[in-house]
Image (cartoon, rainbow, N blue to C red):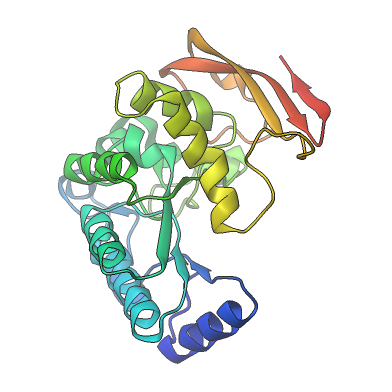
Length: 270
């Protein structure tokens, strides 16, 4: 949920910065966010109320203003629109201490995916239009977007089987984050593998000031070993999570995790 009160978020940003930390906010102006999926042709076709892109953009702008006026750090979660990318790019050029992130589904899909995946393509912020997807990719390429995260949100099957307007937001994202990024970005030459590692590991650790995200002597061994060339169609029975709410089911992906190593111990082995 967003922090709707501007004074409260301003005070929180001051206190977080005093502690050497940041406020990372889900930006959503609730007065214009009511709806099931992105506002536009797909929502109209399905007969559901659409979420206006301004819902994200207005609150992102508010936080940028507070950060710039008071020389504070702030972090904007899971951006999804062209305007958000443009605002953050412009703010960074002015020296504003703003960082941000996006998710694989925003550079892999558009709102059209709702027509085939239904509620498994319903999340908040919602999937947007092709122009927004292109802007997200450009933002990753030029350094505007600092990190790729999953916004992992598992739901029970019976929850997602509700009507589009009443089903909960969110998808499972941990298991598809790497292959989705390889498929949509690396394989299409938008990024290389070092860019991918920077965005998914090194840079997020630096935003959060964690001693993680690097392979070096004496560092904590949190590692992912993967086959970059493995191609396959992702199926529901491949999902390790108890929840199966993923729009990537049935999609051809490239790249497969072989080992997940946490603190030097193998936690997952294919």
